[in-house]
Image (tube, rainbow, N blue to C red; front, side, top):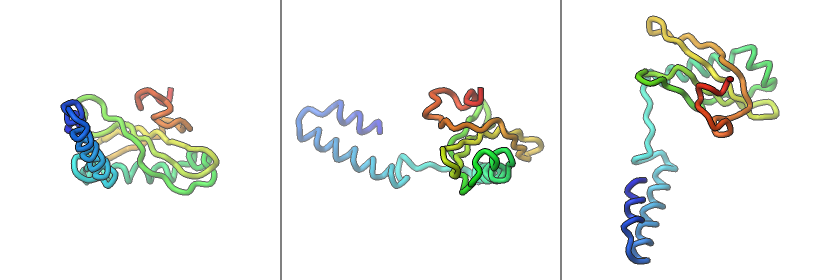
Length: 138
């Protein structure tokens, strides 16, 4: 993205701007496909942790009671404390019911084992909250 911004800043003619626009469109297409500089990679441990957190949410009685007609749950966001290598809070989007629902799950890691606990259930996404994921349950 930064290269596209540099291109636009240095464009002196309409031809230069058109070339930058083409570059930006190609970058966006690449990002839409999850390729190039927009490739997101997660480790096997992160995949395993997300799987455990999502399974915890799917089987949590408070979540099931809140959502009623549970369809599926997917990863939405995570919070990693400064100087920590792995997230300590996960936000899971739950499809079902009549409004968007999110489960916030705190995790501890004792002897390498993930121990999830439900922090809260909310109907506000991280974008609607406009604050850090750590504070969304307050």
